[in-house]
Image 1: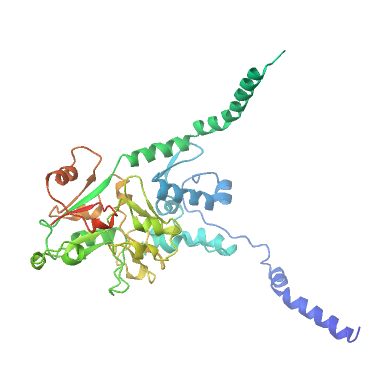
Image 2: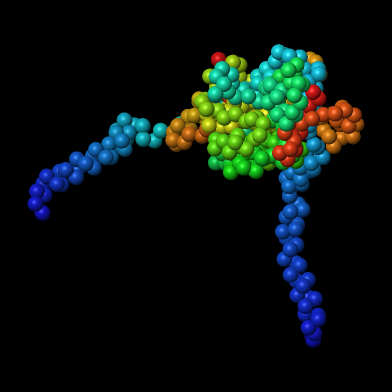
Length: 128
Length: 253
């Protein structure tokens, strides 16, 4: 191989640069950072269990929107029998008033941009 | 045991029926399906309509328009090209172009117009995403989540009842009503007959706001309602009925 030294050195420099974000975060101690969500409500439980909501809130909200808009059914019966108004602004955001510290924290972390709040109103934002 | 052909077919038939038992039980035991079907029955028992009495309507009054637009977060863009409207007034001769009376139009005041919630809505037929659909109770409704802003419905609607949000409407809404979502850029919108208020047992905002009682709203399938009585007792006209859309807004002019 001609110029083996230069090529190998080049490859090493290239790998260092391309993995920069990874080892930079390791060195800076930010590698294992987990977003901390603020829960600001007195309520003990969401409409379903925390694990279920964490995994399936998007599916649940999707189902809510379909049943409300398409079938005009507005009441959700949770698995524990409690009934809730199927509304993002009125039910979800009643407890999770802090959208920026709750929804956005996680969505930013995993780089998803749901468009819910392009239309749906955050009552707290209106007040301020 | 000896089985003849006839007996074999009988047993086979019963056996095949057995396969249907489980799906049948599943369907019958599903509570949400029962709920959905009863709700659909409730809606199917209605045929919502409105009567606009132009004899009572006061020229220059904007009560119904302002009430509707503030309840539904309709932006006031202030530019007729980008205008978004759910209920508005139209010149008499433009509202009823087929009423070809030569002299009648001069003294006629502008007519209150809104989505006609047609029996045979052309907007529903052309919508490629089924964002616009017709509910069993007659409301032609929009699922804004599904609207892609193609504007086929705007081209199809012979009444001009639909508006596209050319720009983000939020900066143009004076006071946002937190009870109702706004729309976003690239979404078509129109009157929804206040379905969100009907769900709470209220009447449409425009009807409630009209002090002259020029707007009447009701269910035509109920016997002895005010709308029904007015429709049966007097002469009403509809906008462009010759197009076969079956508009459900009736006018006394």
